[in-house]
Figure 1 (cartoon, rainbow, N blue to C red):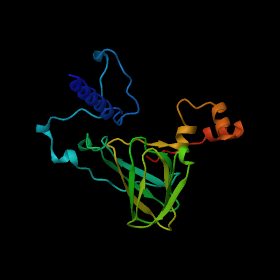
Figure 2 (cartoon, one colour):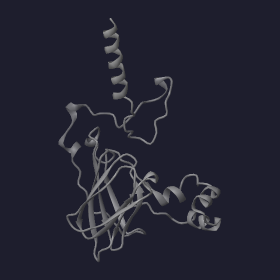
Figure 3 (tube, helix red, strand yellow):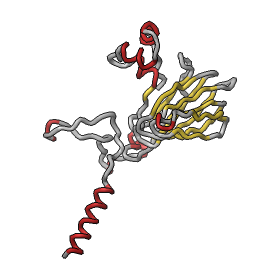
Figure 4 (tube, rainbow, N blue to C red):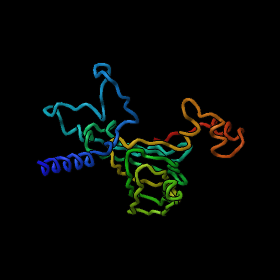
Length: 221
């Protein structure tokens, strides 16, 4: 009997270890409720009847993006919001078009690792590691055919350093990787982050923060 209790205890411990983590979220938040009738639990999308699925559900044509804007770049995402067939498959992609000196500004994908391949042009790319790793900067100049990986949740960027236009395709390890553009999040939040927070965080005068908050921060996504 003692052996049986021992085996049950081991199995219980193993089970608790196996499930001792949260699944990756597909939404920014999911507020818990006590009564299911008062809300809907969603982590993705509702599924279409399999009998009604067609080839078109897995197909999308992507045109070149118009990069004639303040940043000189345009991201055209293909996530589950644009291609319903991606639902539950855990992948997505984006096409990124650049004019010369165009920038895909520092941003984060909170729910996906990114792997990028250059189809045309020359890009200067990089990412910054976490505080625990002393915020090390990893950079590389990529030419046509080169591939670079940006780990999940880390700030990263791409800059066209060539003389002509550039095009890249980014694959992402989530059907809904999300994007947080650092400048927009800090200086164009809704409502705005208080001056006291930002002046102390950046160690600058309030007039600088006020100036930054008045800028028209362009979103290229």
